[in-house]
Image 1: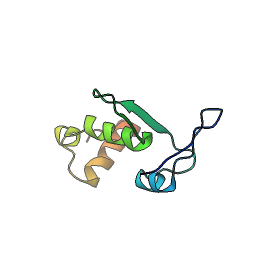
Image 2: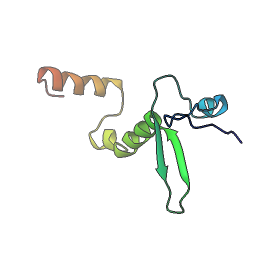
Image 3: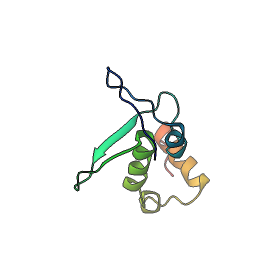
Image 4: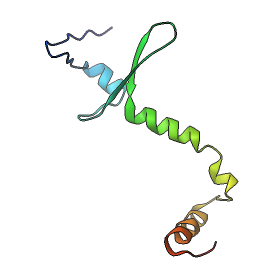
Length: 85
């Protein structure tokens, strides 16, 4: 268990063990959210955003017929230069 003291300005220092666990670096943002049971959870906001984006795009490549790097490059060329795949 780790404790952190709140300063007069409402600031805390996240204990090193927690920073390592969440892979937090200087300048990272921490996301605080409350579960339905009232428990407050904190997480690395960047990692949370990446997981959400990955979930949103799950299956998109297959649906577009993209299966390898050549398909990705063809899509980039199509968007960039108007070339059909």
